[in-house]
Length: 110
Image 1 (cartoon, rainbow, N blue to C red):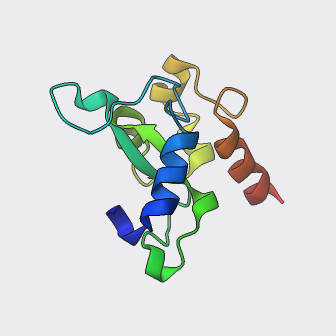
Image 2: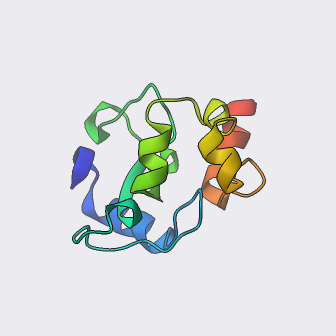
């Protein structure tokens, strides 16, 4: 389990997020083959961590996104990343993302 995430939590997140929470492309499990950009990756909404379960990582701060979106975002803040060329070109913004991302945005804007 990556980042020490308990298996039941990771499975619950993977069941919930069948598509990338940002660009909505279907996820590939397991992550094998040449289509790396479609691989399902664990996304941490909080750019400054925590990144490990034992350090306080929480389920509501995790989602599944494609390798391409995860790589593009890197450690940028979510709202800053939405202003990037990558997001603009793909129409990724606060209104188009999946519900787990919208919930996170509501929490950080409080």
